[in-house]
Amino acid sequence: MNDAADIKVRETIDGLYRTESRRILSTLIRLLGDFDLAEEAMHDAFAAAMEKWAEEGIPANPWAWLVSAGRFKGIDVMRRQSRKDESSADTIEQLEAESNDPAEIADRAVKDDELRLIFTCCHPALAPDARIALTLREVCGLTTEEIARAFLTTPSTLAQRIVRAKAKIRDAGIPYKVPSQEDLPERLEAVLHVIYLVFNEGYSASSGDSLTRADLSGEAIRLGRLLLELLPANPQAAAFEPEVTGLVALMLLQESRRAARSSAEGDLVLLEDQNRSLWNQETIREGTQLVRRALASQRFGTYTLQAAIAAVHAEAPTAAATDWAQIVALYDVLLQMAPSPVVELNRAVAVALSSSPEAGLQIIDGILARGDLSDYHLAHSARADLCRRLGRHAEARESYKRALALTRLEPERRFLERRLNEVV
Amino acid sequence: MKYMLLVYYNEKEMSDAERDRCYVDSARLSRDLAAEGKFVDASPLQLIDTATSVRVRNGKKLVTDGPFAETHEQLGGYYLVDANDLDEAIGIATRIPVATLGTIEIRPVLEIPGLPTGGT
Image (cartoon, rainbow over all chains, first blue to last red; front, side, top):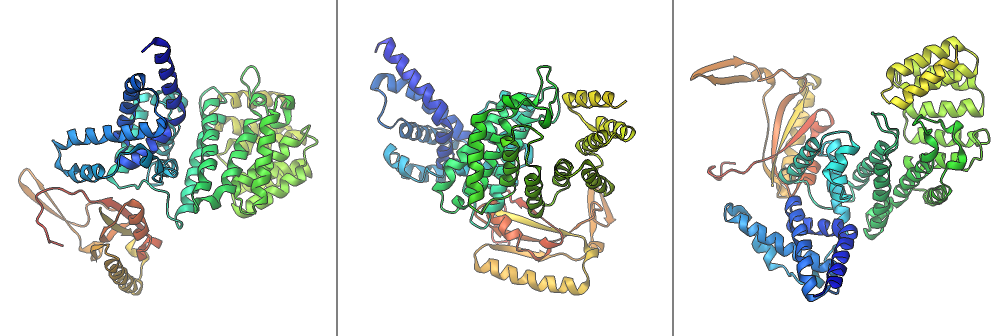
């Protein structure tokens, strides 16, 4: 065995770990029925590969070899544990009765394993922050430290959240499966919600002094793409492809503006003031193409509509040249599908630009009078902005102050303070 | 796996006639579950003003009138079911008549050694 061959094996294994470890883990969880055991077994399998492959060469199907080795290691661990605890004896017997032939394992229903993993990590019986942490850890393969840093918490807090979630999966019997046809719509909705939450946490952090955390948004887009890749393989889940397409489009179109959304000083730049030459045209092209596909299916939902709105913005050469009437029309459909005061607010801003600031202001005052958004800083800053345009400076100042009192994000505070100083 | 489905609702929000109707529906659900092989046990409880709480402290028995805690929704009954997994238990919970009015709390049953068998 020479060094060059050793290096080649190591490189192959490192590459396999990067591209295949999540798929291998998802299959081992199904085969062994336990998250922690599967994780341990997978690491043992990679360690074994390092030794064996250097001696015997890289196998024809490395993926199947690793699954088979992991399964074997997992049974081994269970056998050791069962000396202390007799309850797992049946499971071991059952596992041992099944074939450990790599080729057979590779064939057996592995297609849906990653889908199973995603649905289990996003199960509504888990706390929302646990779903996010577990998805990033198990599906994306981020380390606890990376997730903790992204969510501005300590690794030990995050590790505990994941341990608790795994314990609930085991003790409460949360199944490792693609949900039944009946449950699929709401369960997929929960998955999309987790993905979009991760994206937004990366796109506009809810607190702290950095406006964007690109890594999280990248992971969310990757998750969306993975889902798009996996859904068609499952006959029941395939029907939901358009809305997943819409979500990926929405994330891409928002992501395309990242470089333009904050100034060199880290200050927030509003859509209308952004330098549009900084928008990523390639991302816009892909996003727009995906929106078209989702809309053409006629089976889209709210994510697709939001993506369509983002696409109208993306194709406008300047803020003034935006097709605001079309944006208002899209908001009308969105409001019919999912009524929400925040969407009403966004529609009001579009109305202000397509018709008149007065018309927009009237709608915002109506929303605020209902008390729905009185604690939402963007409602007050939107109102302030329209008042400023109408030359109603005293009212604008009042609303900027309300918005300032309500925002937690430092760059937004700086932006509002600047605006407040402009209307003296 | 066995799951205990605890049925909580606000007793005051249900009339006696509605409650009688609910007992009939619940009995039917229990028979359906039995036919599906998922039924272990179920029963409504008498209203909360029949509750008595008992504590033993320092060897002394303390008996008080009322439930252990005053809450907006009260425990009104239970189902003990045999389900494959939590999704199946959630599916059963949604069929419980009171689910449209109150809350069904699902608790997996912890199996411990040493319990007598055939009790239920």
